[in-house]
Image (cartoon, rainbow, N blue to C red):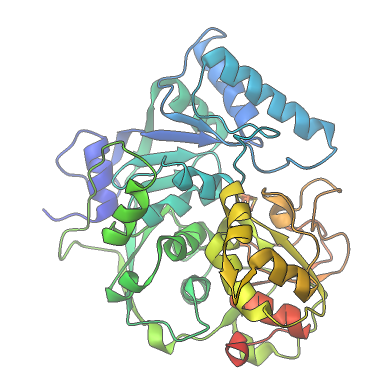
Length: 432
Ligand code: SF4
């Protein structure tokens, strides 16, 4: 019987020939990722349930990436990182990316694939809802809570109900100025923030071939904003090239069988898409950017696991090159690799760093989640009062970026940058 890619990965990881939506199965994990916010809680559960002297199920399988509250004076945030350090030392774990060292990486969902921990066909659990990002490389990846993560840490297994699949077929090619963020904001706008609850959001179609791995990450990253269990795109040659550059470990990709049954199928003509925003205070509040040109902004924010990749900064720089921003513009590279790219990538002979400085952006922050999640009061870019922010992040809930009075508009890097230049929500096509 035919299966979707999600079903096939879960079947293989549970040692079965076949699974169907609704089956409850024990799944073997390939990777358990945790960070500074949930790592201490996960470790606490692991020790409570398996004993103070217990060892993790696999040293190679546990990846710990502190990223959330790194550049702050908050002592509780520092204490969390100390707990991670002690645990890594005690367990002799090889994959720990320690703040303050050359091994520090930054935002977990971008660092994990960059460091070769995400491989097509594998199962990734992470103590963060945006773990769904890794479906972009053809993996089954989902966020779990500390209790489940503590259990995975001890056993390498988790009981999973096989999700139904919503299939989004993306055909054609995006027009200039329209990018992956516009696709996912459009899809979430169509189905709503609960439209994919406990479903796999599978993206296929001939349009996928025109999307880079980073584009695909942007799309899968926001599956959880529609309640999705996972987002997933089958690996192709683009994926393989990305993964093989970053790991020598063997893996076996899987793909949906032709005609595999899904709960619902939708088709999008990418050539018809336009630059958009999600208005406050939910990611499904879709609006065409050009229709919101009267919205006055007070700041722009480019960063996070959704919109802080090097491709995102290249888009922003294409717009800002030779122009000035008119509102406070905060830039936070997701990872150290992205931060290095800001210096090595050039447009018209100028590095991205030079372009952003000439445009009048604020100093570029070191890589971390920064204000995507608000964070302690001294967090770079944190909304402190009634700011009206346009942001490349993924959530615009009340208080998400720090202040309950702030209003957050989600948008692509192109739209954010164009809006930073004018001070109003702006369709970026006029600048491209
Ligand atoms: S960048 Fe934002 S969404 Fe991504 S992991 Fe950090 S806090 Fe979460």
